[in-house]
Every structure is written in C-alpha cells, then in structure tokens.
Length: 291
Image (cartoon, rainbow, N blue to C red; front, side, top):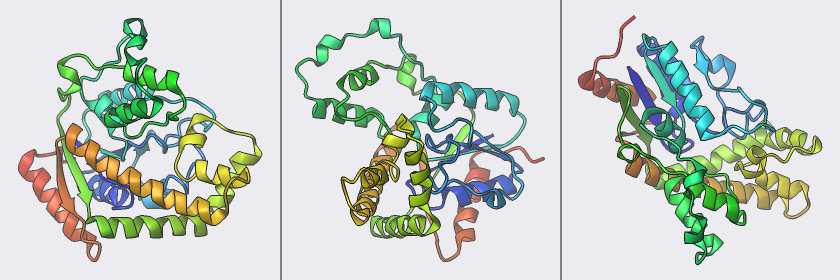
C-alpha cells in the first residue's frame, strides 16, 4: 500500500513519515522538488541521517544543484521505485503536489508539437504567471520568462485529465491553524539561519552556481540577492519568511483541489496522538501489508 503524507512546510510531515514507516515496516520516498538536490540541506529542511532511524529513504540527494531535474524525471523515477518495491508499504512524503500527482495519477505530458503559442499573445506576463500558479504552485519559472511560462501552460494532461489514480494510495494531510503555522514558519526560518543557512548558500554563490534550483528556491534566491548587494541580510530573512508563508497558502489550495486528502490537525504537545489518529484512519480504510 502507498501512504502519501502532504501538507504545508513546517507541520511535521517528515516526522509523520518516519512514524508511519516504523508502524507499517515501510520505506520512505521523497515527494519534494528541492530535496532531490545534493547539498541543499538546511534550506530545504532535509531529513538528517540519524532522523531516518535506519529506514530506507529514496529520491533524496540524487542530482547536483547545477543539474536539471523535472517533474517528468520524477514521474519516471517514482514509478520505477513503486514497481521495484511493490511488495512493501511505501510512504511518499513532501510538499510538491505536482510531483506526487504526476507520479501516482494518469498524468501525461503532451508533445510540444501540439503547442499553440499565439493564443497567449494578448496576455501579460503577470496573467500568464497567475495561470501557471493555478496548475503548478511549486513552479520555479520566473514571471519575466514568458517563453517558459507559455511552454508550461502548453504542457497538458490527457486521459481523464490526469485525475485517475493509478495506484492503491491513501492521502494524509497534516495541518494546523494559520496563525500557528505562520508562527512556526517564522521560527523555523530563524532556526535555519542559526543552523548555518547563510554559509550553506554562500558555498554555492562562491562557486558561481546560478542554476534553476538555486535561483528559484526559497531561502536560496533571497540570500543570493543579499550576496549580490541588492538587499540586507535582515531583508533577505524577512523575504524568506514572507515567501514561505505565501507558498504554504498556495500548497493548501493545490492539495485541496488536486488530491483526495484527509486532513489531520497536529497535536504538537503530543505528536503520538496525531499518529494514532492517522493510523486508525489508514487501518479502517485499507489494511497495509504487515511484514
């Protein structure tokens, strides 16, 4: 059985994935578009080795930051893993909804030969950007890159519009109220700074790496602006918090419209209560493999 754990940043998805993997003797697969990159650790809140508790983890640290890795690549890699470990319980965890949907649903990419760019001639870049965000809130495309915005809009799904689930999967969402979420996000960014995020990003900056992953990733692009002398460090940190909060809001919208998620409010005082609620729901819905 496949258990998908989604939710906004900072609510305990990683912790939930570990608890579920222990409960159901499962493996964990990354569902975050930034955590596929090596060395992007602090800024992506990537799980630490000792936090894995010996549980096999896949699709973390698989490409270098200056390499391209697309949703199409993820779809192929995820489906290969699902085939290889078909006899295991699998926990997919992450906040990149488009990656997860592309992997688990009948999501196919249309040929660019079918594109009709002229239909966007009367639209501004801002309007195109808003259209892209509706279908892909995790997009890394810059608003000024009109060509790529149009190309993204011309990528369509076929076969019941990508809404047919191809695997036996249950979707779990972990959440909290907005005020608490925003407070946790702000605190989390402060902790990232204390843990060395500035030094982590400076290493890429000094190497001259300005790849898509770096220049569009929240926490990285803001610090690059700081290193370029465009903003102060305090301004960069405030921007990271602001954009992370905005991103969390877009995540909620996407998950609610695109995935059949059952939401659970996290008990931060006793996380085991939330784990128990989630497991009761999973067990009642569909019995996972017991190894």
